[in-house]
Length: 148
Image (tube, rainbow, N blue to C red):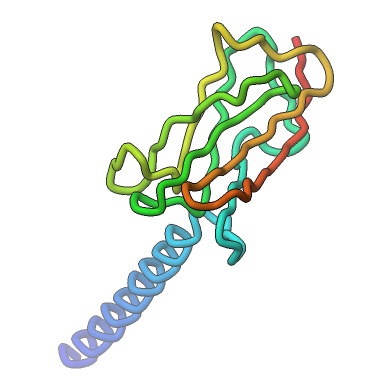
C-alpha cells in the first residue's frame, strides 16, 4: 500500500513540475514579446500600448501614455509623442529593461502642464520613434475619447 502512495505521489509531483515548467515557458514568451505585443520586424518600430484604441478617458485627470518600441540601450533611438497635432513633440521617459536611461524599449509620458489637456470627444495620440543615423521616423497613432 505504501509503495502505491509513493508512486502516486511521484506522479503527482512530476505532473506539478511539468505544469510549473510550462507556466515559466509561457511567461518568458509573453515577457519577450513585450507583454503580449509582438513587434514587427521593421528596423524602427513604436507602438502605443496605453491608452488603447477607442478608450474613453477622463479629461479632468492627467493621462499616462505608455508603449513599446524596437529601441534598446545601444541603438540611440528616442520616442516622442504628440496629442491632437499640437507641436512640438514631447520627449517620453525611457523605462526600458534593466533601467537604462536611453532604453526606449518601453517608455512612458505623463500628460500634464504645460501641454494642453485632452478635449471632450475624439483625441489623437501619435508616438514617433527616431534613431541616430536614420532619417526615417516611424509613427503609431491611437484615437481615444475624452469624457467628463
